[in-house]
Length: 353
Image 1: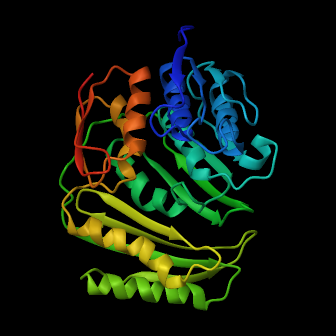
Image 2: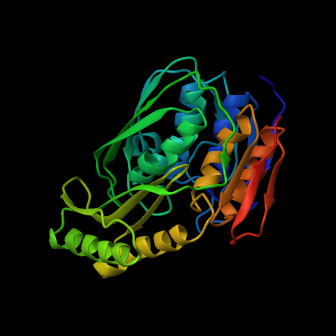
């Protein structure tokens, strides 16, 4: 542990909550405290929203951290971990942690907690309550079908189970996550996707008529079939506290997994919901880069801690990825280089320590 604060400008790069989540995770892992200012400066409502305040408080709980500035709207926080993450049984409700009603994403909360708890000296079980399928965050199905299988290749073994759907704005969803501790992280070569082994998907409507998921799945399967892909999207009518519509598709290739999704909205045709997920999927399948655009930034914190080098090819170098690389560099002395331009396909290399 060290008392020397790392100072991070939250306005850099995409200027959002990813900076905070990565800083919290790596602060716990490395024992290095940080001061983050201009927090979420790139957003319409800067500072800590309920989602982010919940993440700070959950991170503090698993490592006994001291925190300054933990309030809604705060544009600066100081986080001093009290030690490494402690394995155990945890229940985190985003609304309760934030002190106000929220459909904040449980999967973004998991981004903060997963890596520290995977490196903890024992297994952990989490119950996370909030939004499970909400905008601007990975759906729970993406975490199950794409992210966790890829992290398993790097040595992080975890499982997620959806027990209640949670949509914006009511939330009320829940997932249960089991994380195996004492992870030994290894570098990966993710440049070759390999052949497609499986495609699975679900079109779901909660508290809405059954014809909606049927129309979404029918349109999705027609597009998939015309592209020479399996037509395996199943319709599902579900119930829960909140109302919502979406489509979630996972692909498993020989060497990588990927995921694509879209959410419904009032006045948005079912066919448009299907197309929003399936068209990028078909485009991804027809090119040769290994990773979908959302995986690199979520894999890099773990790969930056791995023993060996990693190399990734991605269909798009996103601003999220570039921002995460910048935040990682504050905490870890690993060379991470990017070959390619933002918004274009490219290669990312993580050099040995």
